[in-house]
Structures are given as C-alpha cells and as structure tokens.
Length: 158
Image (cartoon, rainbow, N blue to C red):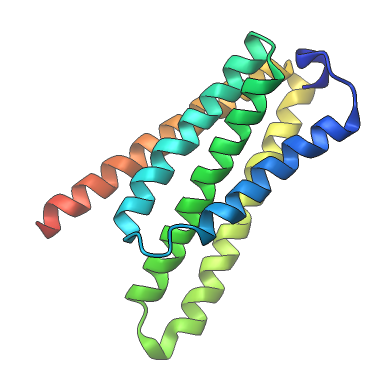
C-alpha cells in the first residue's frame, strides 16, 4: 500500500492500523442502548462502504480517503462484533453461556485472522490494488448475503 499511496513513513501506516482497531473498539462502547438489529444494519452498511473508500483511495491515491475508509470499516466491524456477541449471549441457554462464548470467540478469531492473512498472501501474487479490490468485493458480497439473511429473519419474526 505504501507504493500505491506514495507514503513510506511507518508512522502513517501505524495510524492506519490504529484507526481500524481503535475505532472498532470505540464503536463497541458507544451504542449501549441500540438494539442488536440496528447495530447489524449500521455495521453491515459501514463495513462495505469503508472498504469501498479504501479501494477508491488506492486507485485515486488519497491518504485522507484511505484513513476515513479504514476507520469506517473498523467502526462497522466493531458494531457487527457487538451485535453478534449480544445475539450469542441473548440466545444461549444460561447454563451454556460459557460454552457458547468460547465457541463464539474461537470462530470470531478465525474470522478476523484468516482474511488478513489471505489478503497479505494475495499481495505477493498480484498487485496491492488488485488484492484490495478483490478483498473489498468479498466484503461487499458477504455483507450483502448477511443483510439478506437478516432481512429474512426479520420477515419471519414479523
């Protein structure tokens, strides 16, 4: 990415990584009163829009758009994590909550760890732009499928 945005200073890339993780953590603390459905809608909207901004920033070099997109995608991921965790706890049998949380976190860590590893591996096979574009399309596709499942679940409940 350094070459794509023409910025080599390590501190800038540290800020980019911090913005994703920091905003994700912050997003999980702010909406305490929001119901899980609203968290899901906000997260499923923010994550692909943020990734789209990152892709645009790589094709039309802009550190500002890159950082904004990273932060927005991080916020969306934080909201999705909070909604999923809340849903897991709310639907678990009280006697099985610890087991449900153990499985939740194991799956979450795989889900948060494998995609960045695959993205890094892809950058060795193709350009950063192409790898991030494919990753962004995958994020959009997964978000669209998840939104459709969520809409279907709400229709069945109504």
